[in-house]
Length: 354
Image (cartoon, rainbow, N blue to C red; front, side, top):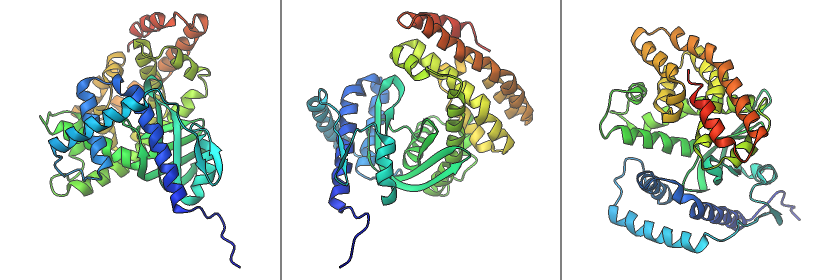
């Protein structure tokens, strides 16, 4: 008699995938209205591309997208008031936010899962093929490949405690979206400089793969920076939860991102002489981050002219302690008056530009 070890029928895995996707639909039903119409339609177009497994170079049918969009919005109307469902795997039930417990069961099947919260407290879920799992110092890093279930917004990198999830497929789609958007007018900006580091004219798919590989490494750097920043910012997630849907939330996230990046991301990119990722980094700075840290963008523009990387390095060396102090001050304002802190956070950050 043969004993099967760790055997889970494929139908059980498919059922798990379906249940994860069901939770993704509930999250989208509740939060899709967070986006402006333009952003929403762009995200839905790429979500359609993913769901229908169409290549990045393939032209999408407007009629087909329109029909699919109508059906998806009808489904969301039906699910908006539903609760997130428990996930069952190998005869055991899990809370959908029990990422560690689910991965303890799934990783041996070369699958990886994550359930957590993102911007504006939106839940994000995904399940994908596990490409690799490695440890760098005290950090657990999971890199996923093909995704079997995901929501409308698929953050390419996420961290929780000292666990980092890097989603190759989502990263590739994010890069494609940025390139596709740039190609409309092809402005001479940071994105143009990043694209010129790869041979998109000769082989789009291979260039996209090469760019993704490089930016995956940069994403790991940012997530490590996020974790390091969080070690001195106790209570940050509760603070964000209390100021959700305010301008103060956007500002607080920008402050912490600047702290994480001046602490770890940018110093490492500079030390590695990774010009392609430096260009891509600046191409993706949000308007709020540019607004509160104008000297960083000025130093990038100077570097593009004088080719002296010390220009950026000097700026971030001066800024790292500044953003640490501002982040701590944000927490203090929240501790003093959690209900009324939003306006005080806005005023402080507005007076703290460098």
